[in-house]
Length: 384
Image 1 (cartoon, rainbow, N blue to C red):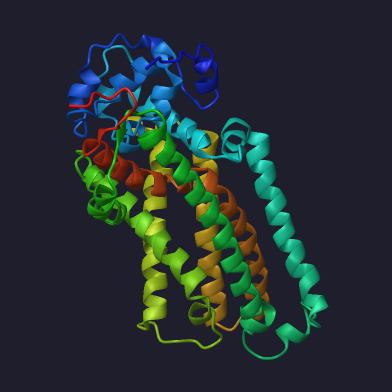
Image 2 (cartoon, rainbow, N blue to C red):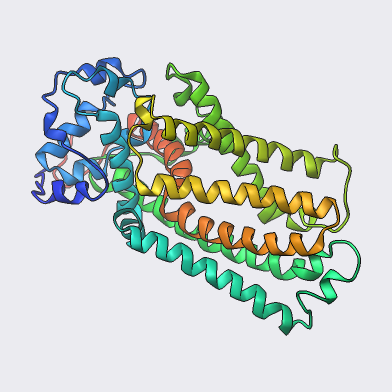
């Protein structure tokens, strides 16, 4: 099978934050140091070599960038300061754009104007929807809703409308993400390989997808267990909050104040704690820059952290104002909360940082599918 070399690959990858990979002279130290390298899946050195050779199709069909959790050991041990850890991070951005059939991921990763402009546009549309929608439903933002006594959250934001919007948004985002994962499967398992995977293997190995999403055991192999724990708290907190808000919104957005030990509030408190803890570790690390994995921050990294932090803080304020019966403040911050949350979900989940939560466990799943693949039969196959 012929392999096509893409001379322009270097210029494409530079747009995603990759620095000077030519500093690498393939001593193999990074691969030897990485606790996640294993037979058949050696990195980061192998991926750097593919980049240097311009082997675009080989990079597109690889799972190794997703198996890296950027513990920083490879970069710390590199005698040439080639920063292989950041190279793998940049490759993940590049692969995210490759899987995305809309082309938006590439625009968001390579253009600050596109990403920030899209966030502001969606936020503005959300604010307009509230300010125009309230009078259309016969409510005055400063009189009726604030003079009825207590916080009438379901009058201000009718639950049937918000729930319908939630489900519509979930279907759109889920459809985009699923279609991108199918493209990921096509490029890794089918397009560039001469091997096939039986249906039974797909079923038998599926548990790895669920297990790796829930526990992230590969991340746990890294020496810094604290970073794994903070990442797991962040991921689990966001997952719980997303499920509660989208699937169980009528149970979560209620005008009845339940006791602090109620499951509704307990889940919300856990999700908030997990998100705040993970955000604190990530933001403090990037500001202090004492750990190599925090030396370099792409614009998308900071946008993700800022938007998620604002989402959590505004959510906390809504809860406090609602508990203490402060309607006007509750409604104001509800609008701000939605103006941050909606663009974050629409942009970050299918096109940017949050998509990594899906691509990583699927990469582990595809890794094991590859291991159990068998040669494809072709018309040139020998018949015995």
